[in-house]
Amino acid sequence: MDNYSFIIKPATEAHTIYASIITDEMEQSAKARGTGIAKRSPEYIVTKMMDGKAVIATTSDGEWAGFCYIEAWGHGKYVANSGLIVAPQFRKFGLARQIKKEIFKLSRTKYPESKIFGLTTGAAVMKINSELGYIPVSYSDLTDDQQFWKGCQSCVNFEILQSKNRQNCLCTAMLYEPKAQKIQHEDLALRDDFKKNIKLFERWTRLKKYVLLNLKKTKSKTINLF
Image (cartoon, rainbow, N blue to C red; front, side):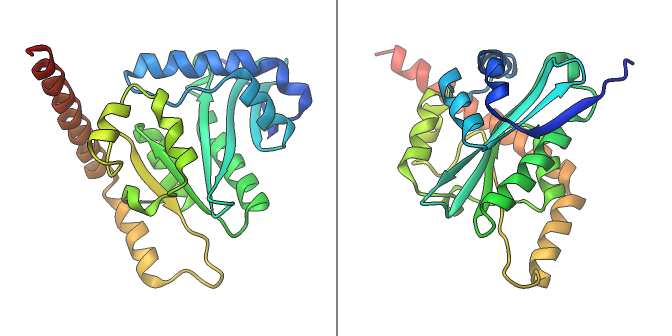
């Protein structure tokens, strides 16, 4: 295995040259997984970089390796770490975990009182989130900001989200809630319980995807009959 030295830091104007590469890889990765993500334009990624709301990873030689950005919703009450992507050639080095930790720290610095949430279909991301203190929650625990949910319209699974009245979809919702004082015992117990049963949770997530995707196919066939 090759040894790479990664530089992971907040993105700046100097990194805007990677915007098109990042959005192209986001789209290709979503297609390969057979799941959808809200599409983002290179211009949108550039805005995040210029605003200091993104983390980028490059090699010591200046090759792009990974990226993630921050979105704020509900007047800053909620924050999402979105668009996590790692270049294919660097996906076996634990880079996603390092980027998630850096974007989490940046989010806590910029929005110390905000709840941080995520929607993901990947078990690996769920594991990383749990290490950072996220726990699985229902969709109703997330922001009700219409602009956030509007972003799901470009996802291939948007039809499922609509059919479930925005209460369920293939993605798993996870939430980190900062505490002004020490974390309550019941929160610790819930978090520890999730970590102990991560394998069971992964199986449940796969089952949910199977059921929802089959419902989508069945509905599509029924419509085609008429």
